[in-house]
Length: 510
Image (cartoon, rainbow, N blue to C red; front, top):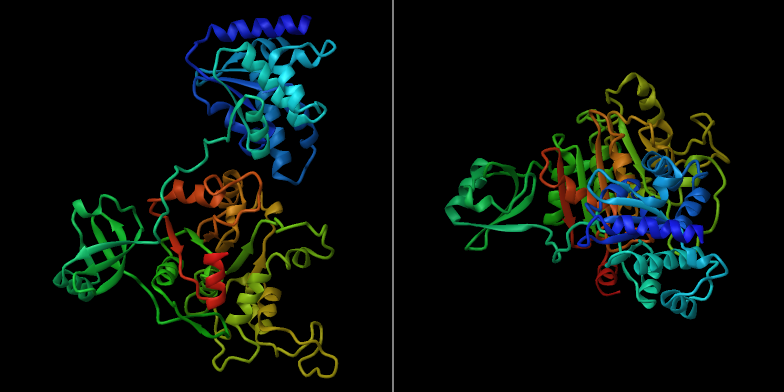
């Protein structure tokens, strides 16, 4: 009864705030997704069920995971906002004008007190030992006691459905979702007359005027088209100016084969990858559009002696399985990550085939002291076993060309679990499957990039296996939306598949 009186006192206090605001009940996964979400509900009331604190307590011990770190951050924030028992029950004012309180549902105590809402809950979801059902029960208690409307905020779709089934309004956490828009085209076309297009082709630059550039953002790729059907790709540099793309005839990995763009979108992609003024690039693309192959080719092309911009290539991706997880993998970090990074081994196999290249370009490469002996390693015969001598035959294991890149340190495998605290200098960093990450995780990776480095985030927003992000809230889409128009950032969308006719057909129809 004492708890019920305390809850009633808290309710009366919140009723005096204003009757126009909403009351949001937060699920555990919202706080884990964004620990600062407490400050992002404007002047509305926030209620956190005590069951959420219990779930956070079970997660805070995860030392090497983002969930564990976020759980500890939430605890620190709540400890600062709610320093004593009275503030927890009565609620406190938040800096944004709203209120925050911890909810203890008295209807789950005192022998299971009855109310219309709780009777309905017990009839539909009788198992109240489950944390999700208890959180829904707490939200129903808030709905009965607080001024309407009361909304349960959760990133668990099943919890949203169960809440609606018992008559409770529920929604996803929308603060970090990008605005819902129609399908974005891969590029825009700008009309010019034939004389303007000819002038652009000869000079490589054209002033579109203020009126024509209102919808464009900085570093946006466009296609200039005349009425006669002539076209020319370009990039917007701001102040009404578009410039011609700066593309070499081909890009080539050390000792590899030349790679050229096969379509217009790949030309855009290669231009952004090779431009040292762009330090961050996001790329959307379905399977088979060339995201992996082109990004690796352009990265290694810029580590050659002729284009020595970076000391090497770093590759990483989130470890999220498709289908049932096969469990822990044995071996070193490289051996554990190899199954996840197999697409990059495939790309390196294509770029640097086993047949020796006629013109090795690695012998004259100028590198930093860290890699002064790397050329000797890379020029070693490909049929030499690790630890063997140059003339070795017999049982010597064949070393693939790209394996020498890994051994020399030119290509490194990064595990995201250990990236916090790093400072990545003079590296070309590729973050694959970035759509599987939360905005906070992507921010953690990007803030590791030092001067002289470049980061590429690639992925397909339509292929997401992480249950706590979707096509509008994942880190790749969020990063593109927030960084769009910045001088250091660019974005490319690849639409046309180039892997095979079968792969293109499957990506479109299946």
